[in-house]
Length: 439
Image: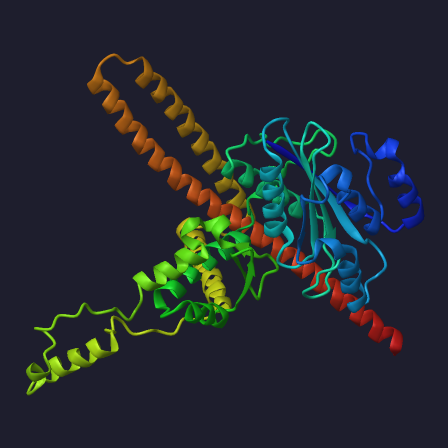
């Protein structure tokens, strides 16, 4: 089990260096927050805490020159001022991990979380009973010069990755609860609840599968993904992808499973390659037998080339066009729903939502009572009959929930349209007032 935290590193260099140089303070529990990039790096890589710097690793930078490289990145993008870095930790339960495992998990977390775009120094401190990792993340990306944003969603992602790594190494995981002070529920941010993001993930997985099926080689796979609008990033032999329309990188092996590791993608390309290797048989591919038969001659040349055409590649529509098609399908579905239910006004829709929710609650109560009857029933045949009724009730509940989802989607769209109209009317009003003032 591991806990995490992350905070910003400010700019007060002199006072922070004096503060962290105090041995009485640095040997305590470490609950203070370093406010300067250099002092944070010096503290994190303190040889007294890391056994002569053995557990110090730089991600996208040399550990011995982490400060210089981070400052060089800032200067190259002219972003020396402001927040200098972010300082975080990952603390393990006493006697749960060895120093090697603790550091290994820390490096993997840094590579997964920030390795695509930022320089990170990872160190493991061993003086306390609870081994813990420190992360110093440059605030400026070496890729595009954009600054790291320590948002709730990003921190939730850090916690999610931390939990995933703990599970991989057989460690316990904390049950996520609403934090008592800030009242933030990180479970909301750990899973993409927004339909647009969900579509992004499902579409990306579909595009990956299509690219794998249609590719002749891994380079061909990379080309196809790029043509479909994806950028590919490699860190620590892991592949992340990002569509041009979105800001979020998808670490495909982490999100979609081990079938999407680089090695397994290559294996799948080989197995499902559109050009299949032919097993040689001298009797079937005798040169003398090819005379007078075009098919035999064709097969013979296939053997010489070690290929056999299986299917013809088709052009795929763009990612953006598929998103637009999905929107059109949703609008079409909602329109048909309104016509079939004879809904003319917002009040009709609100009434339907109320009645549908009421029907769902009634059926849910009925299902609970049936489960109780099934539990106390002694006769096996009676139990099976009750289970059959429960299945039918479940089908009705599912249908009602689908209708409820469509109703709520329509209601949200109506509210969004009304807001857009208000904004448009305000804009027109401002333009008219400007014209009148000019006259």
